[in-house]
Length: 475
Image (cartoon, rainbow, N blue to C red; front, side):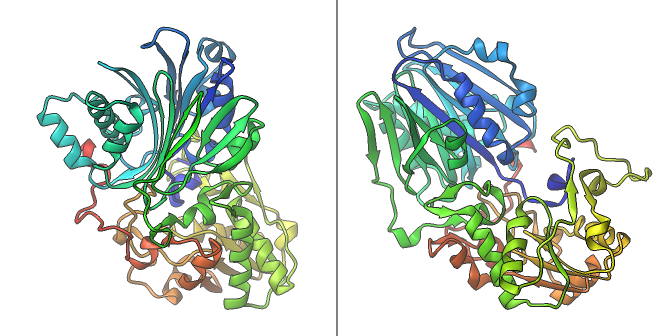
């Protein structure tokens, strides 16, 4: 377990799909696309491809536990022959972390094959799963993505096209999802009506691409075409792109996850036309305006705190500096030190540049405090390195409610801000002062786009489940 997994939020997944109309193999393109999306999930990954000119039911796939460069080799990618395919990187918020739950899911059924990659979390998956089980369905995984795949396959038997089956299936599901679906001759992308999770379209030569973030398009040399709209289903065939907007809500009712801008997405991505980097820079500026403090240096906790720290510096005039060196080689396989040992999991991941902070009043910018279990350690490290004061500023509001839409904000009792004042949190983490981003600033980070603020306010865009259903499949 690394520092992100210990006291940082996790995102559900990243998805990527390609259809190359010239018939070129797409597995290596998917691999590099997933590599660019690795920050969205480090537990498992997979690729499934098919040859649109080959046998209709043949899908080649490979998936496993670990990072992309741990699961795939040049040889294994070379064995994945096909001009259409989907890929996935996973972080589990519902369903255990095990090989069976790795995606993409591949279904063989009476109408052919389906390959499906899903990012998000359904809030009615349990009841839909029970309904399928009572009609004889046998599940191989404990993830809600398989519920979606089953429903698409079931609807396909009675519809004229796979895109109609996708449309009928997703009318039954509630929650957050961005889907990429591969059928024998079509690549389909779908985004839930609230637009919780991002999905965009790109093009490279004669190939079309669907991806969770624009940074993945940049990595494979593709041109950004547009975002998939919340509620939209796009179908990519050799005839072009067809769009079904019958499930789209009025634009003001969308509810994008604001944490894409604050933490999840890579800073070089744009989501629904808004630069993630600019959002973080702006968050830092708002912190400087709303929570000013006299200090000698502003530093960010890598990586997502860095842009906000620069924004704070630009607005306040206090110099921006580097206080932390991050060990980039600590990945998914990092073994957390035992409690009895002297090694700290935080210090294995981060080290302080003593020369940068010694004798200085430091403003430390981070994106969030979830449980608070690492914030106090990082503050202690700064003090041990000689910082005379440590003032903490957080580029999001306090977490007060759980998330049911694909972000692992835990139950309220585990949140440090639950039933505590800011002064009490400040004392707990050992800071000289503490300031959070104001909730009313959030819309400004998304440049006015409607967002979901449920984890801060308890007001969700749709009725949340009465019980915390996350992980219920495993019980």
